[in-house]
Amino acid sequence: MGLFGIFRSKREQVKLFYNTDIHCHILPGVDHGSQSIEQSLEMLRAEQEMGISNVILTSHVTAVTFENTRESLMDAFLKLKDAVADEGLDINLYLSAEYRMDEYFDKEFAADHLIPMPGNHILLENSFQQELMNLDELLFDMQVKGYRTILAHPERYTYYSRRRKRYEQLHNAGARFQINILSFTGYFGEEARDSALWFARNGMIDYLGSDMHNIKHAHIIMDYINSKEWRKLGPEIAQTVKNDMIIV
Image (cartoon, rainbow, N blue to C red):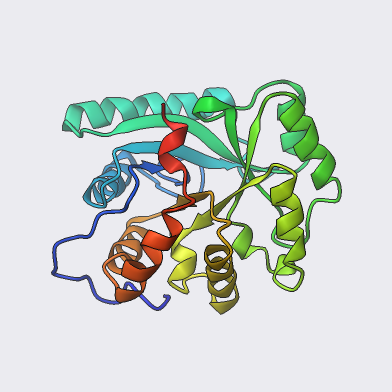
């Protein structure tokens, strides 16, 4: 548990300053996020309570662990869309994925099997142990093919925390950065929180994401955006965040 989310606030829920969540694990039964339609609906209601009306579903696509395909994700997506319609939830769902850059990704990329977000944006995840050796070449190749690359939660890759010039190199090369709101709460540890605040101070947060895997994550975020820290930090971050520009 991080600094926030221990107790649920009874105050009226503060809304986020954007309406589109570009990173979450709400699609049921395909990774270690939501495990059922019921859990997904609960998480979507929490998204609505925070002012989110567009949700891009970015389930893991990872070698060995979650070798999801376009077909398997689409099957789960259509079932969730039907459930949302049956419940009468006024929320728009979009299918994409969070792609770990590994050997399975190389195969899917070569076969043109990726599921981009609107505008051909693609969410990429690095290894948590070390940076991909050919990261620069891969990002360049993807951009040449028309993809707009977004690096998922770079604040969580601890190998960057002692060489932050690398962030600037990647950003200057065209990679955009998506920071997790959960990182600001301390949920992923103080090093990730410190890096998230560094991104904020340096105006390098292009997108925010919930990265919620369960309703507990949603509650932590809901409490945090009611906090004094967020009231100061949110307007500063809002100057660079482009979440709603993806959905046009």
